[in-house]
Image 1: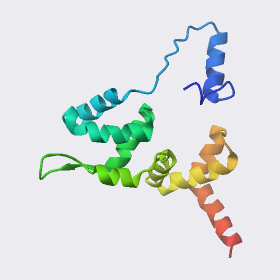
Image 2: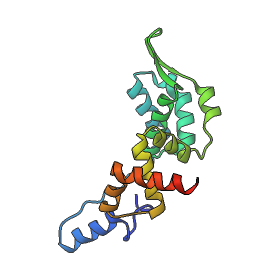
Image 3: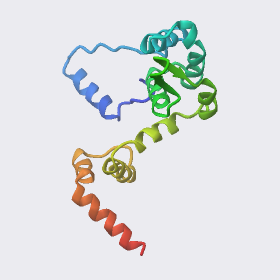
Image 4: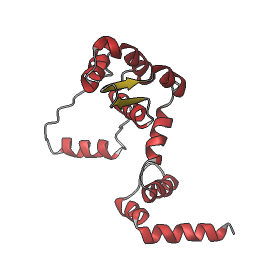
Length: 164
């Protein structure tokens, strides 16, 4: 995604280094997908008819604007939240459209990501908190320090002692 990776981003730097070595790079542009394709994706994934998934597709398209990464995250969050779930009674997927519309505002990408983070192991969440203090990027060795359980416990203990 061109708008997210510039020449200072690690991927941008790597691509530049590859280009300087005269290695051919094929750039593939992935655009947002249209509502009809979203409906096909949802109906195929959940083995439901196109007409049954049309209302869910409207919601998904409105919330994600066709961004495939956001679509997948949004559908996963619906499943995690029980708003899209398998019913062993009816032997099919059940969709709670009205609850979905009420639950998610158009700018909920951050909230969806935050929910996903809250499902990560506590140790990983703590490492992410520490990394957020470092900035947008850090060395792998710094990340490994944050993930080291003994160091993380000591940092947390020092912080807790400081506030007592």
